[in-house]
Image 1 (cartoon, rainbow, N blue to C red):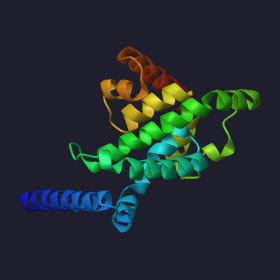
Image 2 (cartoon, rainbow, N blue to C red; image 1 turned 180 degrees about the horizontal axis):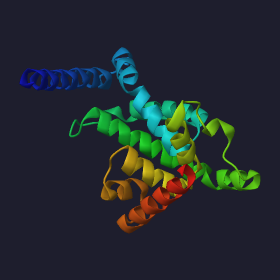
Image 3 (cartoon, rainbow, N blue to C red; image 1 turned 135 degrees about the vertical axis):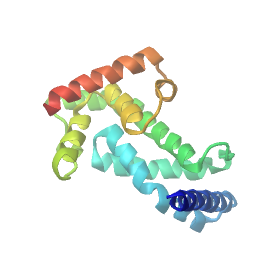
Length: 186
């Protein structure tokens, strides 16, 4: 058992070292190194974008935008946090920026039709599909808070900072999201 834990810790440490080396190479302009970082992180960034937007096609576009932003801002990465943490923040900011710019139009479009676009519901089996569909139907702010806290594991303080809201607002939006999800899934 201890050997397995030591092996896991060693492989995590090696992975961090590999990532640090790739980041350093990418910061020096090595596009191949950045491509390897992309491959290692694209699935998680896409999942985050999909959950925050509720739209598979838009998530693909925002995933690409997040990596473009990451490439542009790579010099600002100092290594104080893990690269995955920094990239996560870049992705969240990319989604929030897009939603601030396009949010009013989307609210009008959805209220006019009275439903979430069909592409918002990714085809996946069973409960995961139901939960993803329910999350996609949440109001934007409640969805953002729910994804950041209950899916991504942020604290209320972190979510409030990312979203530019008060901690109390984060708490009330999480409560609202959970209540709406309970109603949709029961």
